[in-house]
Image (cartoon, rainbow, N blue to C red):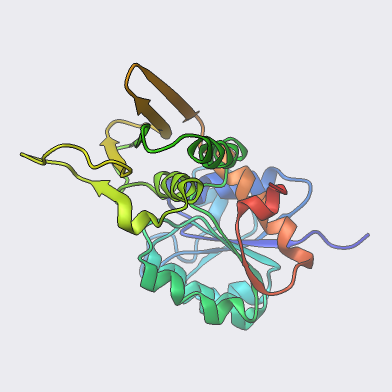
Length: 269
């Protein structure tokens, strides 16, 4: 029987990193072959299982990403934009699938992924869950069906430690609404209202971000007109859904041609 695909987790000490480690080691379709952390991290040189407070897993945390990637068929990466760009170049060099759950990219940073995608499969999504990706599809369809008499607002909530806003998922939803309307989100996006802002502009898409506690992720897309509102909602209560989606993407990418893909491709949506 062919050996199971080997997976490397970057940012292994983080809350998503540890969840990914648990998800991969519990899977009967993949095996954990590497864990990467930044140079100088306290976990470097330790067994990842023991560093997480459990039994040894036989995988030592390293700061040599290229060496780890060379032994793998896929890398799952929920870190930070600049770190992800560095990992993309290394994953392309190793010709391994690079699953990117990192959020907070600028348009310029996203463009910098293109050279790596010429040599390796990149699956990038602001959210890896099935439910959220269905919500994206629904948002696009509803926005297409309703005219600008319906104002669109995207409201998202996350835990206090999240560093970017709006969330990557909120931006996915905003992009879907803009596509449904046939407009560019950059031209109609309203963010961070404060003070005397004036009346809401017709056709604009608003964003609001809430941060607090241990909220995993909540997203509402509100279509509000005079006398009625339509609310599309997704609530995540366990970040394991993101880890399972990322692993699904890593396995899906094994036989694909180099290029950039998203969870819509993975889920066949």
